[in-house]
Image (cartoon, rainbow, N blue to C red; front, side, top):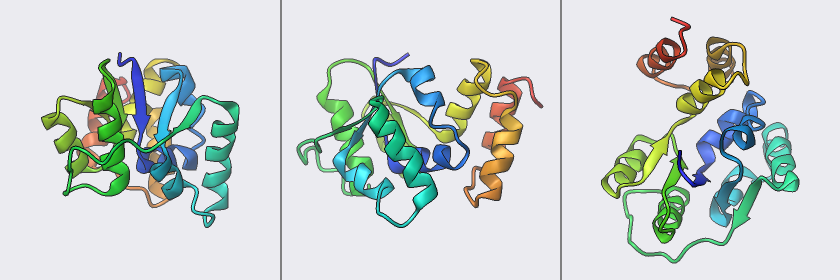
Length: 163
């Protein structure tokens, strides 16, 4: 397991929608969030998800950090994704970046950075006994208009013995 975990906006928002933010400290301990990502997840327009994220910040395990230097250039990514990857590169230890976007995951892998998406976090929570059913969580996400590819869901359900 990675020594440092960094999150972009998408997994934080998705997990907030299913009351899954509480799984993160159980799975990873502290999770770092660059300030630019904090601006994306706390824009002041989504009270239900923002309250959960703010509670995690107040609890101290979701930690806001300064944005890293703007190098290397990562022009194909949005600023939040780029900041997370730059932050991961700035640490010499192994880092895990929680990221859903395909382009960001591809760049991370090219840079040698480990990534996990929301579906993987749900699978980890199930395997650790933090939730009774990954399938039920995927259903909640689907109902909230958050989409995960059916093949990805099936792979997680198979890995969790829920197929």
